[in-house]
Amino acid sequence: MVRINKTLLLRVILFLGMSTNVFSQESAAFSLWDKIPGAIKKADYTETLRLDTQGNRTGVRKVSVPTLIPFLVENKEAKNPAVIICPGGGYALLSVDREGIEVAKWFNSIGVSAFVLKYRLPSDEIMEDKTIGPLQDAQEAIRTLRKNAEKWNLDANKIGIMGFSAGGHLASTVSTHYLDKVYDGQGEISARPDFSMLIYPVISMEKGITHNGSKESLLGKTASAELIAKYSNQNAVNENTPPTFLIHATDDQAVPVENSINYYLALKKNKVAAEMHLYQNGGHGFGLGNKGTNTDWPTACEHWLVANKILAEKSVYLFSYFKGNGEDGLHLAYSEDGYKWQSLKRDASFLTPEVGKDKLMRDPCIIKGGDGLYHMVWTVSWTDKGIGYASSKDLIHWSKQEFLPVMAHENETRNTWAPEITYDEVNKEYMIYWASTIVGKFPETQSAEDSGYNHRIYYTTTKDFKTYAPTKLLYDPGFNVIDSSILKDEKGYVMFLKDETKLPAQKNLKVAYSDKLTGPYSKASDPITGNYWAEGPTAIKIDGKWMVYFDKYRDHKYGAIKQTDKGWEDVSEKMIFPSGIRHGSVFEVPKSIFLQLMKE
Image 1 (cartoon, rainbow, N blue to C red):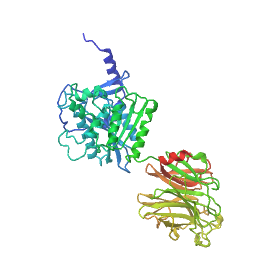
Image 2 (cartoon, rainbow, N blue to C red; image 1 turned 90 degrees about the vertical axis):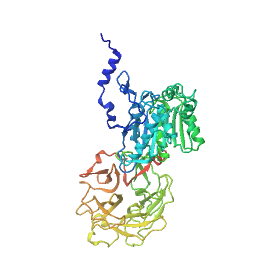
Image 3 (cartoon, one colour; image 1 turned 120 degrees about the vertical axis):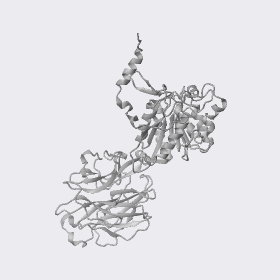
Image 4 (tube, rainbow, N blue to C red; image 1 turned 45 degrees about the vertical axis):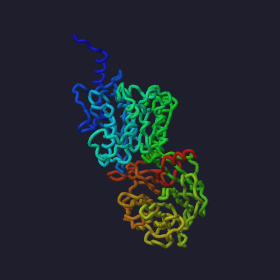
């Protein structure tokens, strides 16, 4: 009679009934080796799973065929940093979900490609030398990423490694023993990680501080003093050890916090850049964080990656605008998705206007220049012959406001409206441009409508905001044109503009193009806005497509259109804007700048 283990049967049933989605992330996994070095074939040695009572995988045992599970970031505009993740489990199993796949998904969310390494678990049954088996896999994983950097769109100089618990020991081992010749055919590709992140890591094999399970699995129960010293990785730190980020909980009863502390002190002694966060509680195995202060470590890790220029700083969209007639000055709103906009500083002004005939601050346009400063121009008056200018490092503290008399040379100038500024990266200069009416100019489009205004776009250039080139005509499309906004595109420059013609009514937005910032620009396109009056376009690319914001001024609303493969889609109904927002500009700022603005 065959006896059935009811507990085992329940686990098998639960496992078979699990959603196939549980392991769907691993469908792209690939073997690390064509021929595994130092392998001993053992037919009955097969990978097994550890499951909880609900049938969820909590670990993988008896890993004998190492694989990498890729989680690639879809960003073709730049090469991406990448991280190899080594799950923990005392060198006896791999917590591939909690300390692997979940972490890889988090890395993807911040723009880092990730590869979960299912490294071989040390065993005399399948390895000629189990002490080097995991290190062989870690070295080859790093080399594999570097060999395939172009294929996977990776930055070959930003390949890092992260390890949890015993995986932290492996990560610190490859960070300190990357020159060890542990297998044949290593070639010339470096196995040194460019950075490492060690999360409640086992570092030492020494008695009283080590994790005994990890030590015995890797080195055996009778390891020599020499072997223990070699794989106590704080002893192997030198000036070439990669920059390191360390996380540990003080109340860790499995892996004493001194593991991280001693490694940090060795890094400090050798003048290696390092950052360590020790939490009051959290125990061991908290992964991305479960409760208490340890839940903050992923944010701290992201900041560390940014500070060490491994990861580009996240940006936030800002909108500079005015309210009313522009008498109270500069207003700012922010958005993280380009759709939902919220005012900053409780919609109070960041800068009060001081120059010009009427001391207004209408149509504020802000860009970040090649010098790292934010440069702003604005309309100072309805009837003046110049514009306002100021600069700032942080959008809070501004230089002394200046009046630029850009149309003073034309006695018949009626106005100088809606100035914008664009930086020419090739020539390292700025072009400031605006709309003006000069009485008697362009009689072919002169009309009594719109109080006789008959605008064209004029410009000047400067490299230092101290001297300016003589004002010139930038764009004459053969109609009354205003509110131009020029941005760099893949093929050159694109100008969004308003056709100001009232009879027959246009009052819509159009587009023109040029190879050079200073033109000449093409004939204006057909209208890109709908059956309403639109003005004050400002645009930015979101997910590779132009988003154009504008004032539906007769409707007292703000709107937006989005570029699609089939043309332009009105997405105004999806937008949320601050009440009373008027003509301004949209631009991106680093999150650090945004956080300072939030304090105002």
